[in-house]
Length: 269
Image (tube, rainbow, N blue to C red; front, side, top):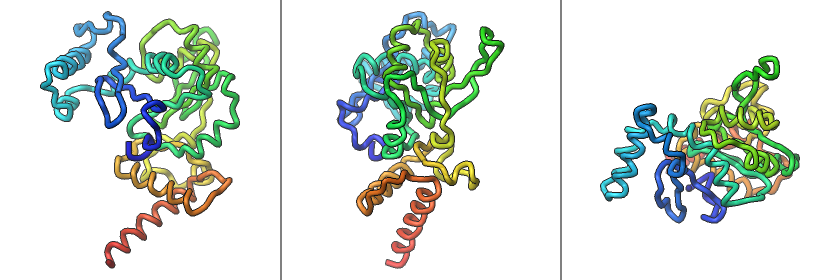
């Protein structure tokens, strides 16, 4: 909330979670609350037991969020959120040009993303992000499919959302099955790696695949790095207005030079 999402008002940002709660001025929506009751059968999926216990403790006013979330496998629960999130996002904010989905450890260079999206028609079926191999399609000679890795974030156009909203069958699944559902609807995933990067800030390889590419998102970003990147990005905007997008090499070199210079100044003060 102090970095990637800092500039969004409660009316602009939708937060989906597995717990209904207030986060500063924003309301986090429990996206699992309206799933079919069949998914709550703890004998077939034990994860629901912890999830339902969490909801009960919250209702009774005895929930210690920091302690209880350690017992819940959020990654396993996440796979049940992807399609309901799309449906709810469209219901709450219909007909937006693009819908950007990202996670708490995703850092987004919004200026670069907005420039990039200007090259796409929002009414076309657009589904873009960092590609990962998905299912093979037996109906198309076992052709391989791709899905957008949720960690670096992904973007779905208005056209693709309409196609999904009118045709999906309420199957509940994760990012890989989301890719499959969209594939079945005739919306292939367009991979834009490394612009949508699955690396963290300190893990980016030093090679020509990355260094000369625009940088749109980073994954596995620590809270401190997110705040530092946000501060650096806005200092860049104030000092110069450029028609050139942030590149890997300029961003990383300039950012780390600023951090090191700041540390040196502190040491000598």
